[in-house]
Image: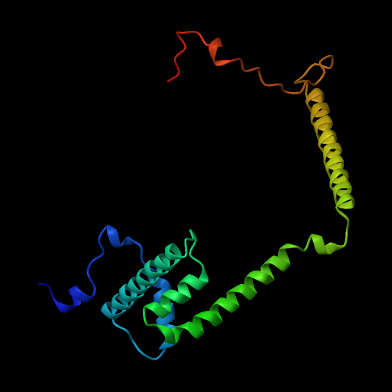
Length: 184
C-alpha cells in the first residue's frame, strides 16, 4: 500500500487521460481563494475530484437519458441526475447557469442574422456580389494583359503568339493505363 498522497492523487494511467485542464483548475482556485497558497498535491486532488464528479454526473445523466428513451443528454437529464445523486443544493445554481447559457446562445443567434437585418433584399445583395465579381475579373484581365505586354517587351515571347489559357490534360478512365504502369 502506498502513501496517503498516492492514494488521493494516483499517477495518471492511460485510462485516466481525460481530465480537466490544470490551468483552468488553477485559475479557479486562484479566483476563489486568492490569498491562500494551495499545495501541488491539493491541486491534483481537486482536479481528480472534479474529474470524478463530472464522470459520475455524466454517467447518471446518461442513465436518465436512456430511461427517457432519448439519444442525446440534455439539460433536464443533468438536473435530474444532480437530484438523484443528492446534489439538490446545486440545482438552483445549475438552472441559473443554464438560463445564462441560453441567453448567450440566443444573443449569438441574433448576431448571426445580421445579414438578414441589413434591410437589403437578397436579390440586391446578389446583384452587388455579381458586380464585385465582374470588377475582379476585369482587374485580373488587365493584370494578365500588362504581364503579357511586359513579357513581349522583354522578348520572352513572340508577338505572333497569342496567350492561351491553361487547360489540364483529359483524364481517361482507369482502364487506359498500361499494365506496366503500376503506381502502387
